[in-house]
Image (cartoon, rainbow, N blue to C red):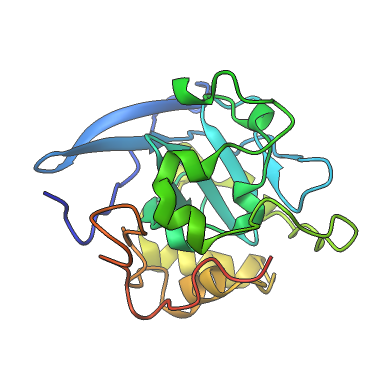
Length: 227
């Protein structure tokens, strides 16, 4: 049974010098997941892509278009703050430039990635099924001479860790408005901000989960956006 809205909340770590790790916590019946990045990560540009990754993290951790992204358990999670709260993102809404990042930049690749060329993106069509693959034909082909600029990083968040990390969404919003003025380019990131960071994109189910289009929130009809 799937739950239409899942809010995997971050388990904050009291030891601010601890390395990034994956923590497990009970959220809802049948759902047990947690993502913990206790300190601001060292984010490095992925060459040739408008995406950053965290080479020192023990997570598949990225930053793109004003949001942090984590890939874990064949699910994508997004947040405006480096340690969450994290929200699941349906496959239809994960930005294509993020999906194009080569396998070598996944610090904790799933077993299924083994055998794939490290300089190529994961085989999402194989992972997510024919329906997704048919709807996204050509996703792994693009004009490499017209790649958008990388978003600026919200480095002000380095000053917030341990007990100083803002746990309340409202406080996170206030700090973000005061210190980060990047304007997202893709529909998903824009709506994430416009809808108060708690919009209905949480746990949207993309195709390949019970049939085409099932569980997709109607507020996001354009899918993953430009790119």
